[in-house]
Amino acid sequence: MRALTRYIFSQLVTAVLFITVALTFAIWLTQSLRLIHYIVNRGLPASTFFAFVGLLLPSFLGIVLPIATFVSVLFVYNKLTMDSELVVLRAAGLSQYQLAKPALILSVLVTLIVFSISLFFLPWSFRHFKDLQYNIRNDYSAVLLQEGVFNTISNNITVYVRERSADGQMHGILVHDSRDPAKPVTMMAEDGAMVPGPDGPRVVMTNGNRQEVERESGRLSLLYFDSYTVELSQYNKAVGSRWREPKERYIHELLFPGDDSEDQRYRNELLSEGHQRLAGPLYTMAFVLVALAALLSGEFNRRGQARRVVLATVIVAGLEGATFSLHDFATRLPLTTPAMYVTVLLVMAVSLWLLLRQRPRSAPSLADPAAAS
Image (cartoon, rainbow, N blue to C red; front, side, top):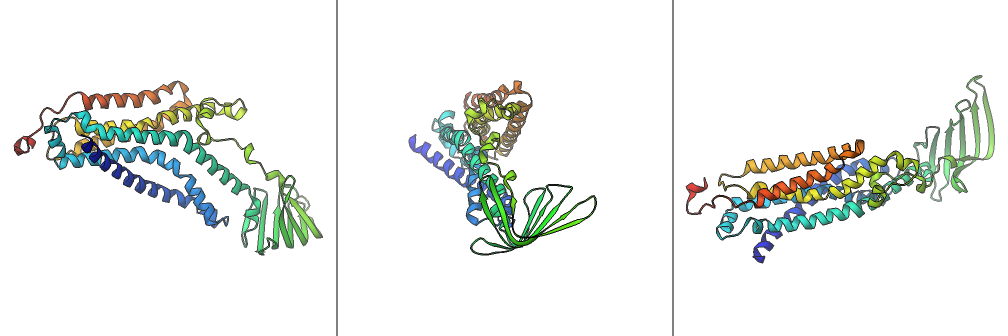
């Protein structure tokens, strides 16, 4: 019996690994294309790009693993049926539970993995991802040091650098500052550098001029300077001051929001995300039970089980849609939160009842093809 369990379990694990890698790579590739602009537009090294992509992996796995487990159970058990292996095993006296045991063990293991992703690895990785993204977006030294590009730091400041030397010096600088709409300023300098300041970064320019136009009169003021500094401190915010999104938070931060105004404003969204983190991994077991109930219950049919496979797929697709819908409903109406748990537990209970209520009415003999048609 142990050998039989290991045999089916090994096939399931192989299928799960293959499907998980294939789906993860496909999703990873599509999401990676969205991050290419950090290299193209901001000149970041490839190592930073791969760090971005790597931090997205847990969010992919949390979605892919339940689907991969469901597909692997459908594939393996349908293959066993088509090869008449399940017919032989039933004729040998194996119960429904004994046939389903390898898939049930796999579902428990995958559920535990998805729980670990949902409760720890997802918020940890997404928090680091958002911090890295925020730092890059607000690291003006990285932006300003790009050559031959008009870099828009904010809605009010645009910087152009013709050339950058190996020691970090900039040459051929143009800065357009419209923070005061009534008096936009354009500065040009031969040389300059980005230097840190006590309140944030600043641009120090040498050998240039400052042109200011009064919009009302149209008068141009021109000032030549040996050294001039443009402060960027008002655009420099610490990462710690940024409000953490729901996906960045651990379970205790979601179920017990803080007292600050932002947490209270998005309280329902935080609570909904927290309950989704707890209920979501249970869908792995629900998907597996749906697949087992579809393929192991009922009579054997040698012509195939395409209808059962399609039915199980439609049910799982409906459950996936229900997951997102219930999450959205719980955000808008907290009273619907229990439905997130009731739905998955009800599906598990019904599928388990269909699976274990009885053996198929007859296990056809291999010597009687007519009975199996």
